[in-house]
Image (cartoon, rainbow over all chains, first blue to last red; front, side, top):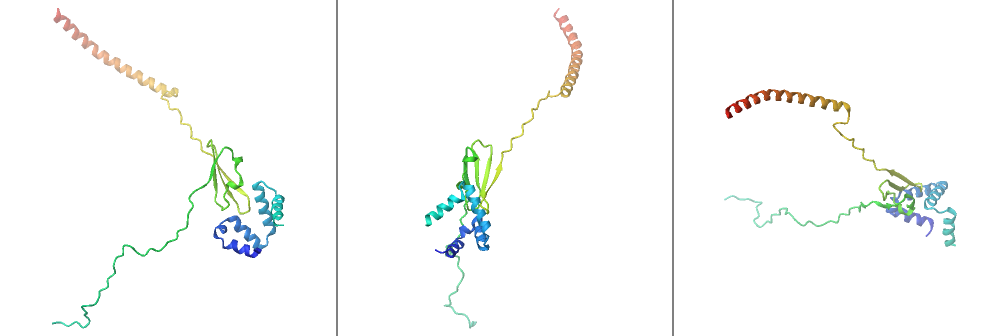
Amino acid sequence: MNPNQLLNSILSNSSLMQNPMAKNTLEMYRRGDIDGLKRIAENLCKERGVSVDSVAQNIFGKTK
Amino acid sequence: MNYYPNYNPYQQIITPQYNPYPSAQPIQQPIQNNSIAGRMVDDFANIVANDVPMDGSAAVFVKRDMTEIQAKRWNPDGTISTVRFEPQKQAEIPKTSILSSDEEKSVFDTYFARLNERLDHLEGMIAPQKSVRQKKENENES
């Protein structure tokens, strides 16, 4: 699944689109607001008590 | 004999009939989730991010000793906002006593003093008559 397919599947998911955070994230992605996306990721990590680096390592470590 | 050119005795008269079982059309109603997310907590520090639903709805956390309630929800920017609710303490009911103040006491003192005066006056009115009656009774007895 390429990023566009992923985006389309997310957009077609009505329940997910009712989520204000997901909606905001997608809008930022469409606008190309990288700083905004980064800020959301940082806030999410902070609220969950994890570091951005550890999450990134976890994601990219598995995809490698 | 009258002739009705349009009259057909075999014509079926179609009347709208009442159908008690109309064809059921499935009406899809949106599923409403009326339940509120949340739980009782000993300490609000025990609340984790996973306790707050990510669909934008708020979760309500009640402290077990009922001293505070917190509502938490995810914001679009990825932070969690918290609204604190504190129970309103019931106002203390003032002690109502009829002798709470000196003023009230003096009013009652005056009232009872006047009442005593009137009783004395009534006793004074009754006592002479009584004594006369007693005298008469004593005379009759003797």
